[in-house]
Image (cartoon, rainbow, N blue to C red; front, top):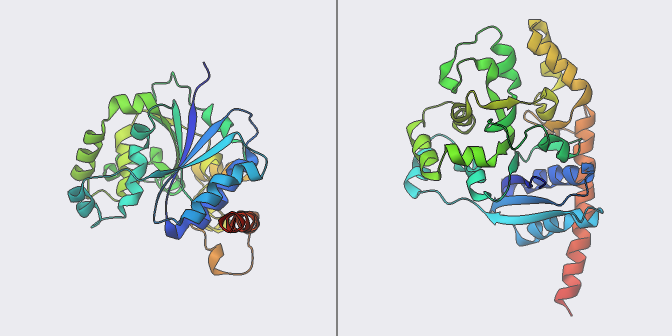
Length: 298
């Protein structure tokens, strides 16, 4: 039987535009005929925006992709109160996704600020469902380079900081992950580790240490060309050279340090792609809006 896969985003109203860019890039790059469910876990997102997201795949000729709106995982109020002192509780939602979507074999979590350049079915194949690994992910670029000079930093949840993964692109092995951590265990672990830097990401590293399949760096390309050329490569580390190699064939661009919304000139193709995709979303959304208005007046 073919493995059942899903993709997940988590979004609040302020970041729906970024999500729409990522979603459209996913849809347009998808080359498989196999049905794919995409879940949008959301809060404070306008109903008309959700309608556009749900209609996007069929509008660009990919009806095999089904976008589904889903409410956030409800966490105890006391825990939320404690977490808010350290970071936005929304960031912790990714830890609970496999527990909600337990009918799937693999669940891919994507940050909203991503652009996909390869059909996502290729990524699912990187983690066999029979694997003992809990997740597949990409090493965090900064930690990978910095760790080449200072490996021992246990506060980040890993023995060797070079193996610290970035949580913007995470492929979960659903059965293995759920067999290892229950929802109540996850809540307890969050409460016990509130002082961890970058809690959501560092806790994921701690939870999955030694059970990670490390993906090619091109599956979560996190940094700018300026960072690569001016900081990473001058360190002359093997890690920096690997990142430079991955830059030649980016499969998922994770716009961690993106400032393209703050300036007019497009400094690289990723910025061009971002706004071309957004313009296409705007055009498609206007069609949906017009159709909804017509139906409302008949």
